[in-house]
Each structure stands twice: as C-alpha cells, then as structure tokens.
Amino acid sequence: MPVLPLIDLLILLGWTSLMVAAALKAVWITTSYRPDILGLLPSDFLIAAGVALLFALSLAARTWVRLHEPRLLRRHRALEPGFDDREERSAPAALETLVEAASRTHAGGR
Image 1 (cartoon, one colour):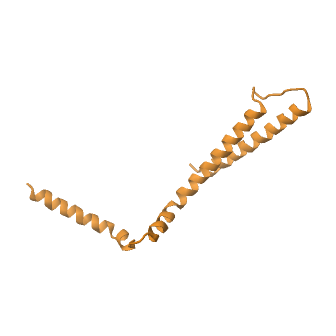
Image 2: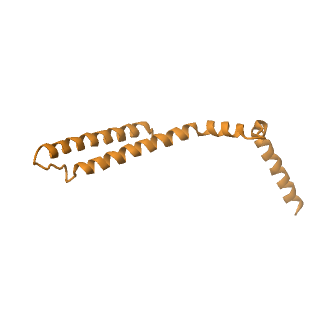
Image 3: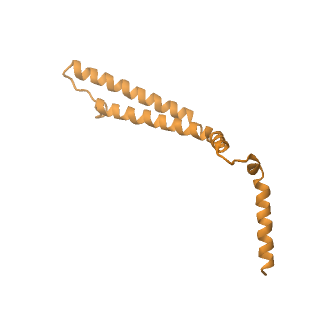
C-alpha cells in the first residue's frame, strides 16, 4: 500500500481540524453562543489536529529512513576502520565453505 496518500490525508485532516478549531474559537470569543460539533470543543479539535500532524510527520520520517537506510548503512560501514568491501562480496563463498566443513564434520562423526 502506498504511504504517500495516507500522509497527505493525515495532513489534510490536521489542517482541517485546526481551521475548525479556529472558527469555533472565534465564535466563542465574539458571541455568547458556545457552539460544538458532535460535542467536540475547539480544544478537542486542536488535540486531534496535533495528533494527526504528528502521526503524518512520524510516518513520513519512517518512510524516509526505510528508503535511505541501506545507503546510510553502507556509508557508515565504509567509514569504519578495517572495513573491506571484498568481505561483503565474498560472503556467499564463505558460507559455502562453512557448509562444506560442517558436512565433513558431520559425515566423519558417523
């Protein structure tokens, strides 16, 4: 499932909640009428907006990290002392050697 439409929806929900809260608060300040929408006060809309915007931000950050993590890990490993790129490329050969050694040890023990 693509994440970008969900992030856009959360941002839209957050800003809409902020606008509704501002409109309700303006009515509260300028008149003696105390409106509510489905029993929600302006502070409730403000909290809902904060939650939606923070969730959108955390989802966007998580998506960005997941997208760039392999490249960042490679760069971090390359900066470590003693890093040899050939070791990373020869991992399948090393695994085959370990499997062969284990099978010889296991076969010789019978």
